[in-house]
Image (cartoon, rainbow, N blue to C red; front, side, top):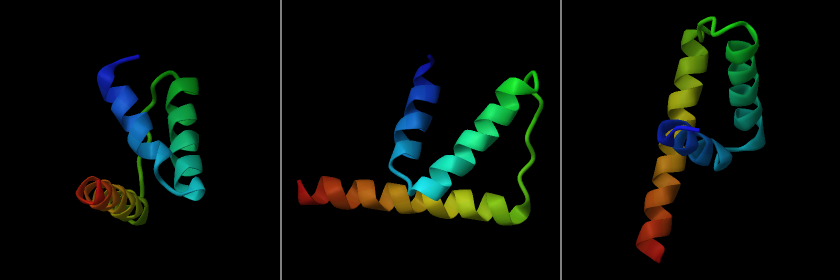
Length: 66
């Protein structure tokens, strides 16, 4: 597994379960359809960005507390 994929899994593991399931479905679709590109709707892109920003914010808060 590449470092990039490991980092993506690490960050995804910190998200709420519904977001983890979304990412899991997307990844499974990509790997089972021979690498076909998965296109997100504008709403899905916004959800992913919001979730990643939240996870990043929580990482910063945890680092500041430690």
